[in-house]
Length: 221
Image 1 (cartoon, rainbow, N blue to C red):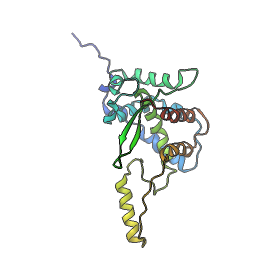
Image 2 (cartoon, one colour):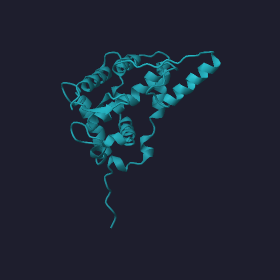
Image 3 (cartoon, rainbow, N blue to C red):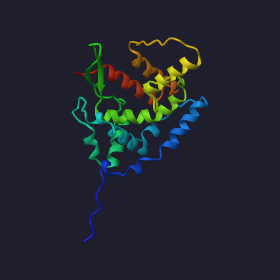
Image 4 (cartoon, rainbow, N blue to C red):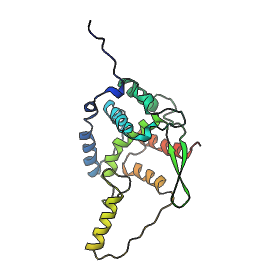
């Protein structure tokens, strides 16, 4: 007897099905370089391919198995069919008459070498998936605006690249001092600057990003 067609869960999809977004991201980068303003990115953010790519990228990170305040992790999404995942993400963002509201973020204090702690916010896994969908679309737009001398939390850049650039400048530009300092609250301010850098205006995409900042500031222990 012929076998029944099994409904694939999102974990069973071959990686090849997730590709196809890179040309879109490249186009966004070049349009941003030319100074274009982006007023409606939500259709692209909530496209099937972008959502499934976001799932794949999150699953590759071991932190996706750490639950947020709803006690769910990436495994709870991986057992669902891909169309169900895409539909749920769209409903989370656009289905409520009150607009998108991320759930409270779980707070965890991470020890620092100086004896102090650094607060870490762990979003609920569905909110994290939405967040990744947004990141994938606005990142190439922001990248086109950022300084070439910026290395923190950017794709294909690291602290090692910053150190290498420092040594190069010391040797070639007759410089003699390196200053290291920390800016309190820098990342919260940088998030807001990223949204502005993307030229997102005041539409649905900007409103959704702003809700994330609010959820991050309302952590739950």
